[in-house]
Image (cartoon, rainbow, N blue to C red; front, side):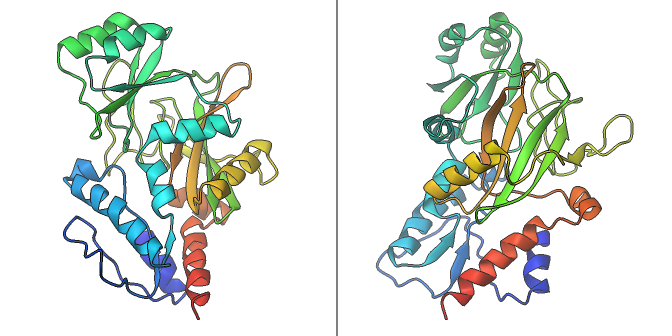
Amino acid sequence: MPPLRAALNARGVPYAEHFTEGGTLDIAAKPPVGVFLNRMSPSSHTRGHQGGVHYAAALFPWLEAAGVRVINGSNAFAFEVSKVKQHTALQAAGILTPHTLAVVGVEGMREAARQLTPPFITKHNQGGKGLGVQLYRTHEALDAALDAGAYESSPDSINLLQQYIEPPEPFITRVEIVDGVFQYAIRSSTEAGFLLCPADACAIDDAFCPVGEDADTMSADGDPRFSLAADIGADDPLVLAYIKLMKAHHIDVAGIEFVTDAEGRRYTYDINGTTNFNSGVEARHGKDGMGAIAELCHRALQALT
């Protein structure tokens, strides 16, 4: 929130914050006049606020039914809390994704995993901060984890088994898009892990992937873990496909991640609506993702007058 506050303040955009941790929603009431920006994180349950996720899922349709503009509203939020929905939409759009199985519960993962050739990874359908992400190089390694009760189920009880795409070079790429406009792409080093968001770092092998608020953002040789992907531009075919997908599904803001395999195929595996930008990369290259979001809010407010 601090970077967003700073961006709104710098542009003189009036705002009020609503901590949607839960509570009562009067469906018959009239919503306030204004523009709502959704910043509800799918990992809120890690901070004891899964009720907020459910509340937001009810709040946004209520606002939209009354004609209120919600940036990253109910359609976008449905993607935010469901990787199954993300993958089905990506596949329908002709965008390459890793082979993924969705399993309700935990015990069924054992048998379902036999449909995949190792290595493979596990994920939570309602993801966030790398929780549930685990790399397994054998079926027996997953069996052992399940036998030990070491795997914690996704908060919605839907768990994913996914083909692991191993990049020949140690990085994944994240494309930042705001209001249909490409902002920039960022490379995240995978030397100490993979599935990195711009603000977090994790290490992964046959072990749980811990990601925290104070994660180290420097690689072993002292270089920044995150860098600008200067070869990815607004005219890249994959970027254009992402923008088309976001428009079709009413997603205003997203950071979309892909990994490139040894044959140069780019597999997209995550759509992050509550995107966070890397301040170090932005400072070095004159980028301002939160500024773009603040300007989107400003335009939406101006449209009300």
